[in-house]
Image (cartoon, one colour):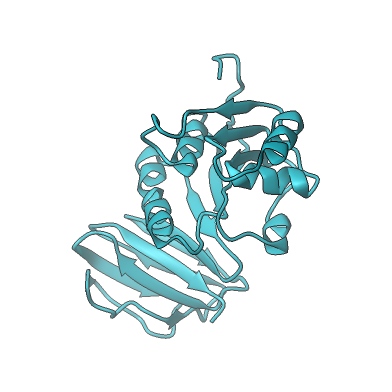
Length: 220
């Protein structure tokens, strides 16, 4: 990758990785998205007629003919040694996007049957939060984001909201617009107090004074 590659200011970056994908993922894509395919996620895009702006990874999850399709079908192609790298393909894609300053990042295909990868990818939200760039994860049934301050949730197809601490404690949790309110509460890792709330107002708000709070919106 070269310094001549454009910054992404004002654009949304969508990272598509090789976890659980399907037709739902294509409905998530918008016309002006900067598309980043990580490993097999790049092949998913090419296979479905989309052109990745960047395909990146070690590509150990694709067959030789699929790899050639990705190489030919991507605007930029970056391959690395699968043994010598320290980051997962998804983290490489996320760091690349963060360094170019998009207005937000959406990650698809980062959850799946590999629980270790799923948990690691959820924790990647911390990097985006620290850089001040809104970042979310979505699959067919859930949407995840992370906050350490305030967060507004607009009405959507996701009806249930769960709040899970990613630090030992999350303090000063206050909810507005939910069926089950909280006021200056403490959520503690290892307890289930924040699981399965319901948004009842067109805009619901979450406030946090201290700690990292994972917000999971689910269909049910």
